[in-house]
Length: 290
Image 1 (cartoon, rainbow, N blue to C red):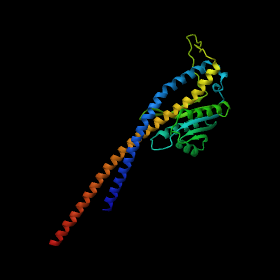
Image 2: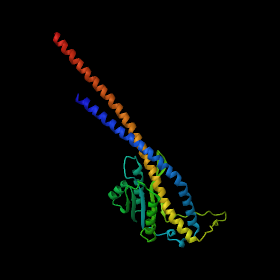
Image 3: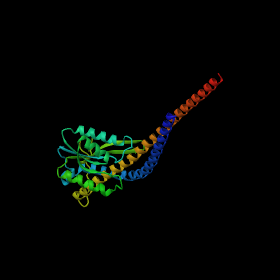
Image 4: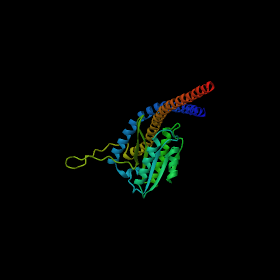
């Protein structure tokens, strides 16, 4: 009977776990709707601003703003966006795998990271990476002003020559079941490749600046940095909730299958126990007759 009690206890434990994973799935689904609406409303503006900056970088005078200057790549900075909590499938693993691949690609250079999320911070410490700044619990009430503060810090480090290249590593939200780990160069801005005509001459169409080129570049470049970091955080937030929702849905279904298997095993064991008892009773009755 002890074996039956153990099986019943295990079934009860799996049912409790199933209730937790089901609740976590519902919470993730609720948060995902808000995060998805936020990124879908922000993404068109951010993409268009990026296109404008790439166009300007190819046509404007590079000496007008220090954020357009190309540096010799000795010091590389990665902004890595992860989560503070686990139980979200391969969300953190994909980003950190992309980070380690980028570190290997930049072997021989001075590498530092700005990390968002406890999971990224823990892996960075384990790998011995230099952490410039860490932002824990960033997902709670994250807003544009926080992204602007981060953008200001990155810009100052680049202008002062502390870093020569700044890149973002984050999960881009595609759908609930698909998130792609992205490595995106933030600074210096990659200029658009100008097209050439059949004779090989550049088809260079310039802009008209009002009030002047320097003022426009100053405003757009600062805003571009903040918007890109903010967009990456929104992408990452939606990806995290989508990944957690999928992971908890799979865990809930797996728990249901395990409960079914354990229940079947319990019924067979109980049937075998009853059969054994009946055989003992019958054998005892036959012995008394004899």
